[in-house]
Image 1 (cartoon, one colour):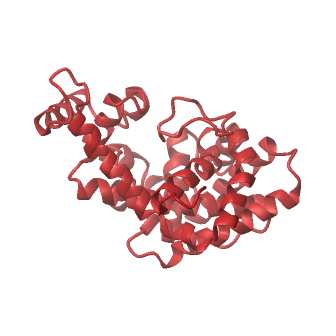
Image 2 (cartoon, rainbow, N blue to C red):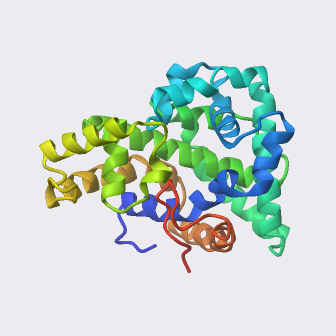
Length: 288
């Protein structure tokens, strides 16, 4: 980090450091096993139950809105049925248990003082999320009980920060009048992820219609290639996302930010051992 970095640039850089720590919950087999032990068999049951659990035993409607890119019938297939298999409290325990076990396996060589200091700095940034208006998933995660051990605290803080950022990203997409299918179609066209990873229950017809809408908007050519207008439009959304995610990092002084980035580097690199390069998050590879 330098004195010339804007708040949005700092937020983007820190996202590349902590997002992979959160993402072990989606990719590590121990995370899947913890959900299965709680009665949530199958990836999507664990995903929807674990990520929605901070909101309570909700039905599909708020999750369709909050998660944004999933076809409604995919969400409705999981919710509210998953709450008959595990309560939100049980899903949260499974989520945290699986994430901590995954991180423990990946970072066993790091001393506890490293993990403790990382957790303390991440928690200091995440403390700003609880008072951030309009960030439903971020605030719901910020309100969860503080973890007892460093890895639990660290993972929960990373999760709170990433949901806070995600809330802001969805707001930027809505403000730009981009709907869920158009968002996914653009990401595939721009090479951010492969179509199978982002299908998320939408039909081929819906996918084609979204491409047609983006072409009519001037974001794609008739052949489905991104245009300069489209690239500039989506970059504006990314910039707005970064700017909206900046406030938590402004609570840390530059020295603490640099220290946190240094501390997160080995955790992020370890997490990338289980995160595929082609991932639906759009997460870049590990940083040095």
